Image 1 (cartoon, chains in turn orange, red):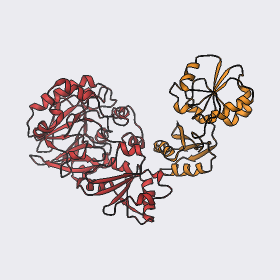
Image 2 (cartoon, rainbow over the protein chains, first blue to last red):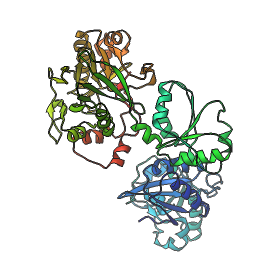
Image 3 (tube, helix red, strand yellow):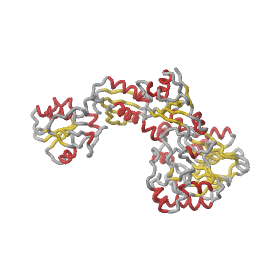
Length: 189
Length: 375
């Protein structure tokens, strides 16, 4: 089960209705929120991807259960990818890749659970940005923490929060998963 | 508000008659780029339906006023929606009934010619997918070659002609489309023939289609003779019908030749393909009319919509029959091949009887253009 903010039932609906309903449901979501769209129309897979691209939303992935397709989409956050990143300590993906073999580091992935489910760095810890305030205590402050999201924006907020909470060795993996070329693993079942 | 529907048959007639048509294809860009309604006098605009949900004013201004406009989508639903929106803007349009699904399934029967001792030969042009099937009819009996999944069309056609289907052949185990051969044979009691070399893994009974096999239909004894011609598959077999026609299966097309890689053995079969084309076919009479199992581009259609050309002409004009250097030929048929057909491995399994998905799944498996040739 992937945690989402909204589930839309478009089962049994033929094209164009799955997209029409999704577009409507998206209007009521906050930027950054994730929707799960359940559809039985096989054509919805290609169309959901193409529509997300054309509408500027983020298509996370799809899974299939029996004859039901579950599509995961995240509503675009207009500030994303545009804001300047303020936290001074950053590292590039190529550098992060080299650090992965160390056993005294944590990769913290602050994207939404559905984004994480469709592809993350092996061993990365998942705490969505919205839950970090409460769950920061789960992290081992002895270790160096590399924080990653999709484009370096949410992770910037996260490293600042962690610094305020007294974590001293944190870095923002500023290029984000959108530019990650190393291996990933999925757990979207 | 109801808008006009245009049937796949009407569109097929327009294409075959080279009539002007403007197609507003509202499928997503990838689907359009992969496969669309082709025709010599068709203009296109591809705007996905999901970009039109907020209004069609913009797209309406790009539509011509001097030719018929057809809105096309995958299964009809989105094209009806867009057509209705355009209609409300005062634009006169039709939608394609059944969408690209219906287009893929439409067969247009075209008479190829008369048989010498009485009887007729028909070609069934599956215009949306480039598949060609054949029915020879004589003296109340019929033989079918390379039937497609839409078996009712063949059954109805034979009934209209008062002919009993006696023999059903597949020139090879198809990888690009689902064969209707076995199902027609089961429905009519006809014999279903397959080349044994292609049929090693099939799980049903069939009659062996081997070199030299001769069957006859009707009182006039129209002869159908099998000619082993491997290369596209190891079992590929051609037919000489009535000493007039050469049915080449997927070995030789009008403007291209077969590809040897769909069963995974391009290197091995490249040599067989050359042997079939450059030796076996070369020994046959130039006057034979070649009837292939596919066409790839609309230019391969004759003016009457048929796909047929004399073997002698093909030896002069078809690039694939005119490559002297053997290595160059091998390279052409094994390197830089076009993408493989949609779901071709599952289609092979289905044609072997190993899987039997429901009709809707079978439709999805066949989506997309034909890709059995190398040019």
